[in-house]
Image (cartoon, rainbow, N blue to C red; front, side, top):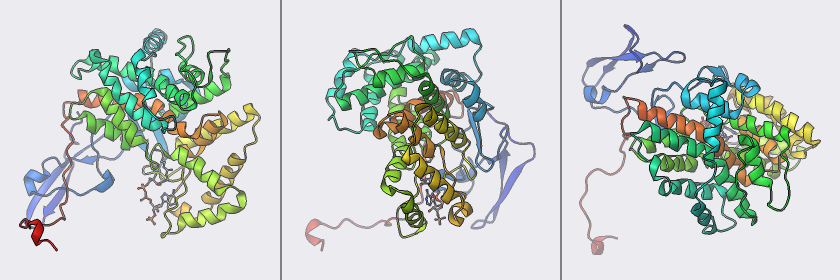
Amino acid sequence: MSKTAANESVALTDTPSGKKLDYPLMPGSIGPKVIDIRKLYGDTGHFTYDPGFTSTASCESKITYIDGDEGVLMHRGYPIEELAENSDFMEVCYLLLKGELPNKAQKTKFERDITLHTMVHEQINRFYTGFRRDAHPMAVMCGVVGALSAFYHDSLDINDAHQRMVASYRLIAKMPTIAAMAYKYSIGQPFIYPRNNLDYASNFIHMMFAVPCEEYKVNPVLAKAMDRILILHADHEQNASTSTVRLAGSSGANPFACIAAGIASLWGPAHGGANEAVLKMLNQIGSRDKIKEYVTRAKDKNDTFRLMGFGHRVYKNYDPRAAVMRKTCHEVLAELGLKDELLDLAMELEKIALNDDYFVSKKLFPNVDFYSGIILKAMNIPVSMFTVLFAVARTVGWVAQWNEMIEDPAQKIGRPRQLYTGYTKRSYVPLNKRG
Ligand code: CMC
């Protein structure tokens, strides 16, 4: 638990009562200090008003740090660029979950432990047949991941650290299996069992694209790109889906139910659904000569159209993940020998938007989803699976944050208050007296 900064506080005057108040400032190891207002309501009878939590720290965390103005993202102190360049997804999972990079033996054991959980209970297969074949795979993910709590009863006790870790491993291990099954079901192909001799990314690609009747060899360049996509999406501090997981978990709900809640939150186009929305937008724009028209629409206050893949709540500078993703995007297209029209369109759109006063003055830079959509498309991942892939990657972040919350002695059930602006008390009007 952070300590209060010595002698640092913020003084306020409650003008209705004239009371002078003093609230301590809590420092982090880096980043803005926070005002500890836990006693505010007791002292004044007032709540604070902060829709969208733009000025509110909902928790203390040691996992991920973002400086949106400088374009910095670090996990446990390690810059994302260094992790993306030198590490791999399993190592990043270990780092997020346990706080340190693993040594060789720890890494081998962790990878083995994860692979021991890659299969799902055979009865889970039957869930899929209950869905329409044209169901959105995110709908299937919400249902199937939530249903895991009906199967793994020996890892539901959230007060037992061992059970929490088993549930975390299960979620990280099974998510690619569940995701690939959602895809296979949608195209009417048989499910492919996980292959524990493959690394995490290669196994996922194999389960997506192999068929039982012939050998499938995973392209190592694509596996590397997939691994990098997973690293870049692994965690992002208190974003909407992670906050959803924490809020759901704050009531003591089991981890599988909490992660299903996170998946639901991630689905929205303002969050994880953006990579899918980027592709739809590029298709809608269609050709270079239409870009100006769409950029004009994005700037029009009376038009709901926004440039998908641009802007971020926290980054008011280039998203550091987007820079890595942009490079990976070019590597993948070069490897595949693809000259993609949509990528050309995306590059032109990026150029125009980065030089447009509206986007420059509002600091709307391309975000990670702007490029990930293009790479995934080049890898033949269907557009409806883009957000699912984000969910696969983010699962480790969700479980790391969920574990941290449970272990935090300051943790309480999340229960925001409100500014009520509805009717004041009035008397019931019988039906025959209502106009
Ligand atoms: N196109 C056009 N105008 C935009 C855009 C955009 N993509 N994003 C923000 N603006 C404008 C917005 O209209 C507003 O203008 P004004 O100040 O004149 O009212 C201003 O910029 C600030 O926008 P905001 O909606 O108040 O900012 P926010 O922090 O609430 O929203 C956002 C952040 C990501 C939801 C938003 O930028 C957006 O909708 N972007 C497109 C969707 C997208 O790419 N989402 C992926 C986010 S990254 C993946 C993740 O971490 O989940």
